[in-house]
Image (spheres, one colour):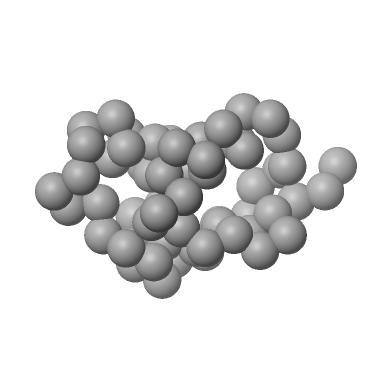
Length: 58
């Protein structure tokens, strides 16, 4: 299965509570942090919800 790299580029401070929880569920804590996740429909949906705070590299 392919993987995607997800980077947090904006702070979740002051954002909607569900968006903060989504960022945490993706394993992101600090700005600039990069995580590598499997490319699944569930992960894609999480990315879609908070894409304004992320950079995604396929």
